[in-house]
Image 1 (cartoon, one colour):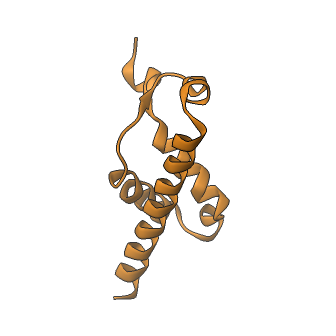
Image 2 (cartoon, rainbow, N blue to C red):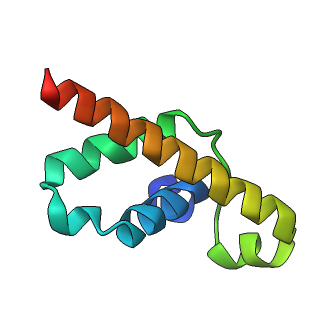
Length: 88
């Protein structure tokens, strides 16, 4: 078993999904998006999984919605931080 291939943080998927919805990769450079991901993920608790289906099957809808709201909040705070830093 190779841990970096078999185990990942489910919030990584949610953060990338939300950033894609905002169309930020199209409007920003790779360094900005990478910094944004790191800042957002550092605000969220880790939820390690092996398979995406594990979260789909075992996660209650209300918990999934809460995770999505937490993700949106973390991404928004990270955007504000990066934009404030860039404007100084």
